[in-house]
Structures are given as C-alpha cells and as structure tokens.
Length: 88
Image (tube, rainbow, N blue to C red; front, side, top):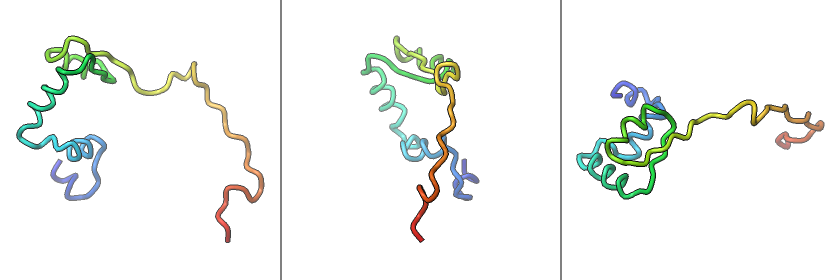
C-alpha cells in the first residue's frame, strides 16, 4: 500500500481503508462490537460471509452487479442537434 499512497493513485480498497481509519489501534475491536449489535450483516460475496460468520450469526450475501436478463440494456435515444452542449 505504501507505493500506492506515494504515487497518489489509490485503489478503492485503499481509499476505504484510509477513510475508515482501519489502521488505528482500536479499529478491529470497535468494528466487532458494532457488528455484533446489528440484526444482520450484508456482504457481497461468500468469502466475506465466511470471514464474518464467526462473529455474527446472521450474515447475508447480496451479490453485486446486475442480472443482465432482468435489466436489459437499451441504448439512449439520439440527442437532438444542439441539446446537451455547453453554450459557446
């Protein structure tokens, strides 16, 4: 993570780690305490679920992404001439 920070190009994981102050000494204890107080924990993959199940009895997986059969892509209609442009 050090070179990434020095270059100034942070991955989403690193951004979340730094903004959440996950490097602070008490972070893990506070996270566990807050997680146990919830009715359920929602994660987006089975790996995260397996990592959290020892700490909480109700971990649910809600996968990320879009199901392409339920949400079909349709291209937007063409723009009219002159619409959507900055004034000159």
